[in-house]
Image (cartoon, rainbow, N blue to C red; front, top):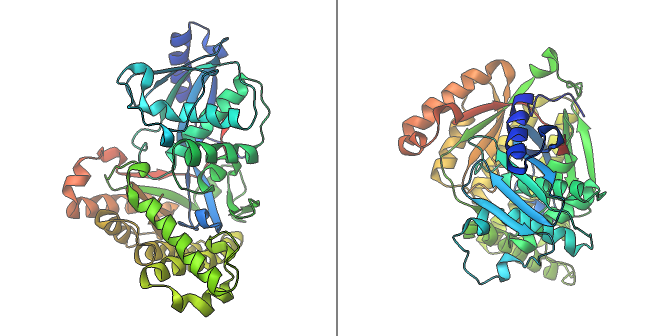
Length: 430
């Protein structure tokens, strides 16, 4: 792993102090999980279909300070949400999708604690014995909590690592990818793939992570113009810009995302049946490209667009990985922008403010390429930008977006409307 500037010592000291106050112990006993946010330069919306995706983390994310509770009690406070979550590791955790009970308004039943409960659910379902709870304080990067940067996966991974550490469990990153999938798919009922947690758990500074979401195989691809450590030359190559729309809506409350997944599966079912492979799972990665070309006329226009996005995006990922491996950031960026356009036209994600933001960013000075981040129904856009032009690009985006969406722009802290970031590393305990 490369030398990292996140989290800073001052950030960690704030977390340590808070946990020490909560548990009455020395701050030196506090461990910290750093679980970074992720971006997906290429591979938009195809992980749930078993496609090939690319990902990396950024130098911002979730910090979870914790100590073992020395009993089964779990006590958690948050830097972003009110109240306190309390439960025990020996309590049975039932999936929320099957839980018809109303949430209590008491501090013990805070909804934001579902990810901690989900981590316990996943660990116990896989046969792990837990008897130690944690006392912890969790905090996200300011202004990024609902940004489409997979903060939910970062939170889930953070709780998994904390519970595993407290209970002296040795769990591999690939196992934790599956555990976080259980949190999101089974416990919370979200129909997403494994891209987010894979990026958070497998990334390495200076590398692009190639993930085959069907076989679960991954590979780290180094850009030859990045040495893997921070220095003046590497940091000048590019910056990652995050531009926020001001739209905030939890993914599990928006039917758009899950309906797109269902449409992709229906397209796969039709194509597999037409090609004589109807016994296979109806995901588009099980459809050979040749079969798609031969039978795509059988799809109605809506399903045809979903399938076209999948197959064209898979091609963009492979070309993008080649461009990254040769240090060709210009071609890499063009493919990212093409991915963004296909997300709008074929996957039909996004909404007017996000589409406007995307169109502004691709016109900004020094931008190699841009696309939506996350599912595209809220949050932000990402861009790879020439490092020397990052400040000019940031100013341009801020100014132009404020002109066409003044109300949404006014809801964002001006200092957080456009952020300039560096690449990050994998989730880890400090």
